[in-house]
Length: 348
Image (cartoon, rainbow, N blue to C red; front, top):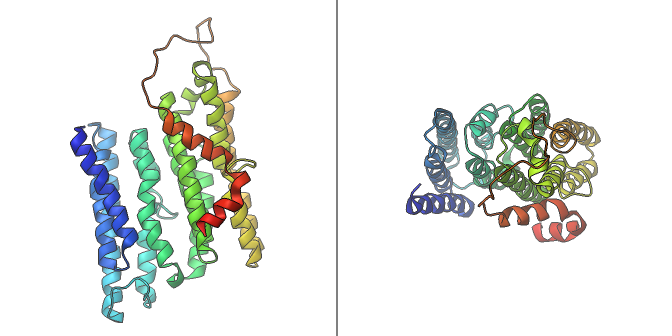
């Protein structure tokens, strides 16, 4: 892609998200979401492959539907209340419609069906943008309007997402689909705590972005898109394989890694709020997700791929990919738990 076009599209992505962040007016927030969608569509379709074009078409239709529902619901709310302000969401029908549309945008279950299919059709770098940056603007709107939503509905969405995210990833062999289901499960953790402690939602989103970025960049550096391809990475770069396994376990939420921090605080807050049953179901659902991360770690570190070569180190060319961002994200995805109080203090 032409570097000038790429720079324009990336700056438009930034502009759309910033516009949504800064707005308290529904029309301005909707415009930010639309700029975001229109900026990422050419990035998704830049590889002229049928799968990429199919994924782009699906994504565009889903996002356009969600944006139309947001516009309709905010117009209805403005018609009833007389103002476009996000804080004044008094109409229950409009509020529920906006929550459904924003859930569709970020891929919360049961509006998640597009997410694995779309992510599977993209290259890893565009998939990374879709899984991280594209979640920011809709989540900013969800956090801003969280007090207007029905707490029972938020709890149901969170529990469903965590269960679907764990259950859906069990039988997958494609790494991008596994990361898509991982994303759905993490979104569930963020939504379930939203009504009680919005700062923990923000903390979980931040940690999710760090860990997912490390996972995607690791797969990009090792050119792996299937579980089978992971079995050969240990002979090519043992250190990358070791850190990749740790990053996956961090995504699963195992202590003493960074991924344990948001889960720990969220379960603690749920128990404080007098919801031990919800906390128990969430913890048990996290075990389902942990299983498929452990499966990936097993394939990567404890199996030898069937090969005919007598040497364990196959011939390969030197990679020219930049590994500095990967190193940065990996360090943060693995080592932030000891500074958890500082991170929480910064987030609050």
